[in-house]
Image 1 (cartoon, rainbow, N blue to C red):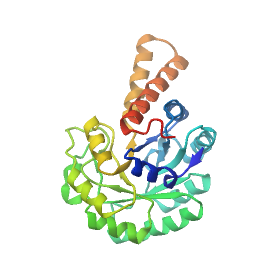
Image 2 (image 1 turned 90 degrees about the vertical axis):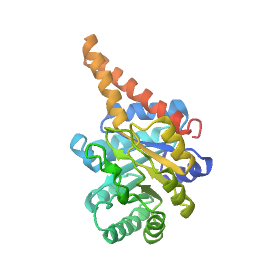
Image 3 (image 1 turned 180 degrees about the vertical axis):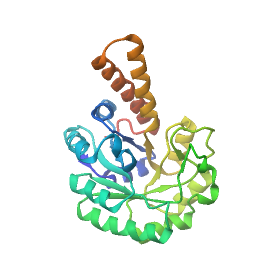
Image 4 (image 1 turned 45 degrees about the vertical axis):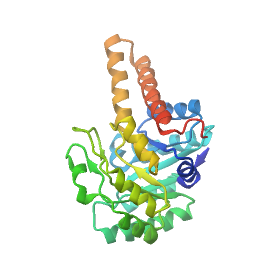
Length: 278
């Protein structure tokens, strides 16, 4: 069933578990994610991000993602992740996405607040939820996740939520997008302080590559949504490589890739504690 973040994240927050966002750029990844959620009886968030559109155009993938969510036997949020432009966010809403993230965190803070507030107003009129971001979640390739003066402060988080009305907030506590070159050092005390200050569900970006303990610690201290993408790519690559080595053909290799991705999603569902929460 198609739902939005409001429908699932408050329950996750109260139940001390997290729901995973798994970006899917094609039908193989989409099928893997939906099957994993149904087998695990877990809510799930699927979608795509603006930087991924060159690998799966929005108008092309939106109908299949949305219809798959509607047909699913578990709650599915269709989320437009890291929307960087107003026009693309509106396009996602018009295509039927049930949730969007507007990410103005790289620019001026006041401009981020102003733009996010406007997106919230529009998205809510569509019945969709909105995630925002304050602070800077780095890129692993650049190593800028270690720049602690760009981390979210409790005061910034509260101010941002009160001024924008977002339904979920991505916070910067030391994670990064992509594959980590060195072990990340998460600021759990900062996360605890943010959670003590705000009641809005908190989001952890850059989840691929974190340790099991990292996930458990952040979820224990208030994270209700975790973003995963790189781990799915690595699982898919493993399946394709194995298929080529075995010489089993395109369709069989496709199914092998899908199964590896599905197992990666199921592993995260178990770890996040959302198994049997649908």
